[in-house]
View 1 (cartoon, rainbow, N blue to C red):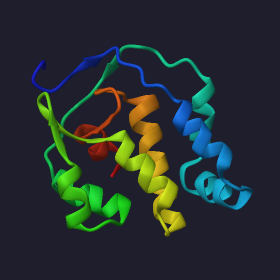
View 2: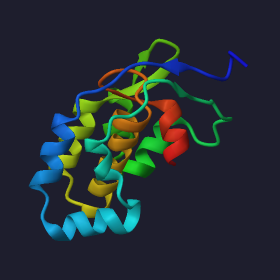
View 3: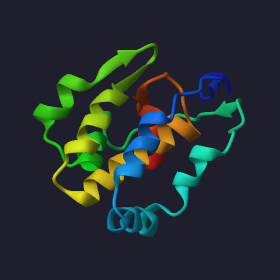
Length: 138
């Protein structure tokens, strides 16, 4: 079982996510709510510190999953993927920059939701979006 599970006690700072949420107008927030429900309420809830992760067989590579979620090209995604420990990650800073500048509101909302999954619900590598969470999200 240890080959398939990870116990994590990491916790990310949520200030940047909260600031982005606060900058969005009601129309963008409604788009988010209609797609992802009440996830932003997790900003104010203390989450338990022990979490389990499972690793599934990859139908799509991490690169392809990030391309689907973000709507960005391989040329944008590939150089931002980093190896961190035993898994691949993309730094939160890259996703934050994308959320702030993405021209497609739907993709902006998708990346923001992914960020909540990673930074709030399933933090594994501080400040990074882990491949295992994109499996769950995708």
